Image (cartoon, rainbow, N blue to C red; front, side, top):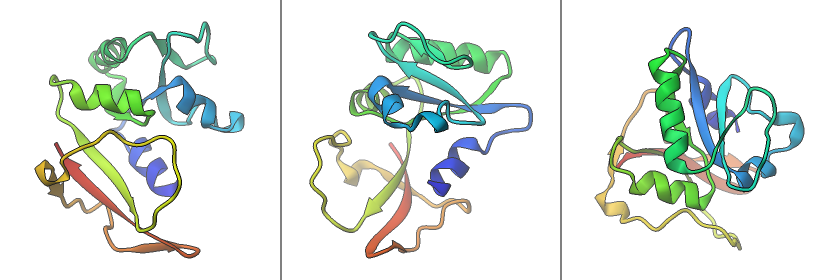
Length: 152
């Protein structure tokens, strides 16, 4: 979580980054960590009627983009991070208005899962080397992983 926090909170002076997430992703965050601090939280949901103070609610991914565009124009938002779930990722990958950069954690192990990142032709992505992202293999217990950055 340190990598995620660092990447999504590092912003230009006087601005904050925005995170766009779906209702299920929001619900998966323990209540004591909601909203994600030092970020503008935008939840995409057609079912939620209200959200925590300081959190924005959008009815569609396109609405969330219009909202963060407005906040950016007002000098409040630096970068925008789409942090899940799968339908929100799909919408972000399908839109053509903005460039897409993927911050990926490659886990060198298989796990039983029921939700997946949308299918991509990984050969079509361009690997990006950033000083802020260490791509060396790391360990958490017996799990090996590494971070990578790609441009679509």
